[in-house]
Amino acid sequence: MISLKRVWQHKIKAVPGFTAKYGIDRLVWFEPHETLESALRRERQIKEWRRAWKIQLLEGDNPDWLDLYPGLSP
Image 1 (cartoon, rainbow, N blue to C red):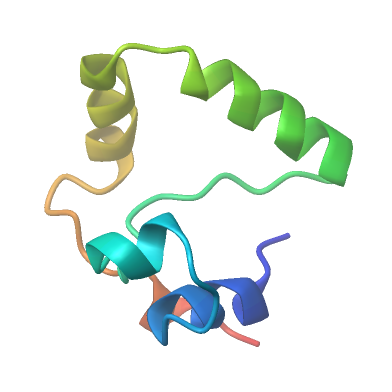
Image 2 (cartoon, helix red, strand yellow; image 1 turned 90 degrees about the vertical axis):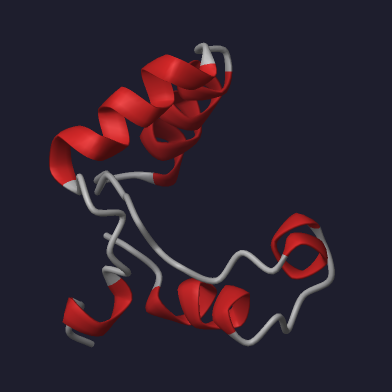
């Protein structure tokens, strides 16, 4: 399950941090998980990957890097 509230906070730069500092406001990839624990485990796994692997993962689902947020339903 994706947190629409959290994505919206990033879009409006409500929380100071990386996304606000660098103007990152597009959701170009996400992976749903049943539990917070599994999501955090996957996040730690992906953080160890090389950048090229991350881009390959993203472009496998979203080759044009389109913002996926508008297509999400509440």
